[in-house]
Image (cartoon, rainbow, N blue to C red):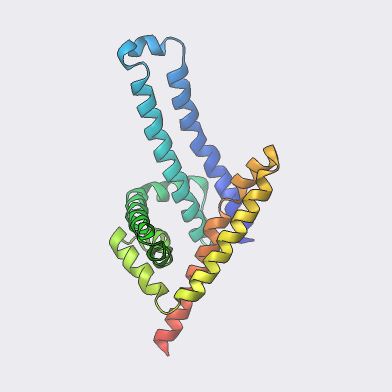
Length: 212
């Protein structure tokens, strides 16, 4: 039930966010626009604007999926507009959290791979902490590591299972052209939902351990 609600909400958000992208593309592809811009910047300015727009759009799409997953699972009613507004308000912290964790994990993989795997497991829940608890990037990374502490191997095993399943699913969907593309888009929240359910289980487990 969670997943269906999340898919429908994510579909609505995608449609809503596609509109400004279509307008932006139409603006730079309109008749006479190239002449108005001028020959010296004919390619450079449109390319930069479109690239930045696409980067922000992609980041916002990721954030809206996390928002929709966390809010729906928590039982909070949320519409398309509210989802986008919440995601936009947390976009800076969401971006910085993923940037910092990504750099740390990348450096870890450079040093014999294993440190990268360890960092990846430690910081897997940071994005949820930014969205649900409005933590700053460093706070979210520390909180994620603390949450995983004492449960590293179970978390690693479950994440490995999710990754393996995702690879098999992507290969299967990739063999079917149009349907595969549509199915991939609709199933994108799945890759956020499953780790979030693990995140919720860990919070409950740690709360019980603290109360004991």
